[in-house]
Length: 387
Image (cartoon, rainbow, N blue to C red; front, side, top):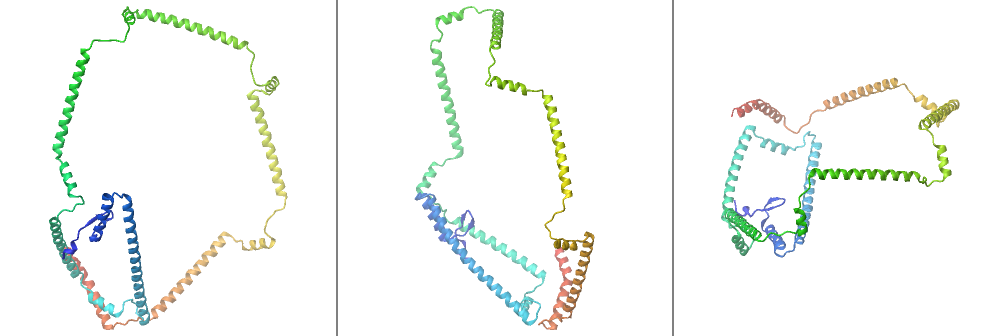
């Protein structure tokens, strides 16, 4: 295998494939535009548009080739059909094609063994090629888009994870110790200052007086609440008296108020009156409906059909059972006629003599080979199962 078949493999979002030098240069160009020239999404859009046009051109070319292949297949099929119609053969294969098929026909066991050996050979070649390819890949220097200065800066900033963890733990301990020292110094400064208060001398003197007995304070509060409650009740009584002495205030005139009083009635009386009114309405509706039905029945029957059309409808009207029996009889007659036509067709086909371009001796040898293959098939199956 040549060195050319092991070109550099590039990975994309659509999968891994062999780009070649042209696609590799395109990828490097896109990286340069985006990261070095700082062009952003404009570089991606330009590259995507170029690839779209290229893919569209390839699709058109593949479509043209596909149409050509389909036309060639169609012409070949038409040629075979014309050959079969011309020489009267019942097969689409020509004599040369059938001879070639016979030459290529092999025993199933032999084909199975041959395929097994071929598969082993392919697997062995694949392992050898993969090992050689891996050695060549590891022997090549690593490819990196970054410059040497960027790689040097990355190496300087890189550190051991364990060393970084130890360093951070030590830094946290130092912060905790510094906080504790500051807190102790602050507490010492607060304790060293003299005690001060926001209360005045009068307030502190008042606070120093002896407090009252809780039961005495509770009794005073109870008496005070009783006095407040009694005063509030008296105020409510006097307020209600003043409201009753005032004249009634309304937006309606005295005439409107008198009319409202005249129309005011008992709810039960209004309900009984409404039920009686609904019963009278229902009785009147029934009487109107009965009168309307009586008028409809007395009026002559009306229809849009002419007398001639109604006569035709009456002639075509049949009993459902009679129509069902007639349809069943028609279906049986159709089935009988179809069976007779099918029998006549089969007789005509059987009367046609079989036609073939092959020699009778060749046909006899072929039948013998088929019978022998059917006899040997169970034996070959048992041998494979035993192996």
